[in-house]
Length: 129
Image: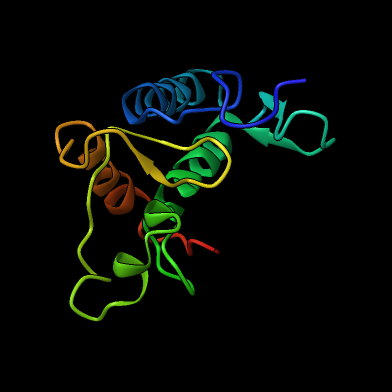
């Protein structure tokens, strides 16, 4: 019903996600560890708001982490495989909702650069790929 990179499941905009993360952290500070929500929806797994914020942060960080390929570069082979380009990190305007590929302008360091704050804030947690 909502297949593809529709506005229902994407694109991923960093400013909105960042504001959501910070809001969840503030609500967790107020409500504490006793307040839990199901995350992801339909999973039956209950998490604190801090854990939900961490989960969203990890998902955003994973866009840039190189496993065998970096999701941010999608199918662009030059950035995925060329040793001169594969570690050049571009901060796109927004990201594909299904695969994390960068879309739009590739120089949006103003808001997509917020990933650096997320990495710093959650750097002590292992980001599993």
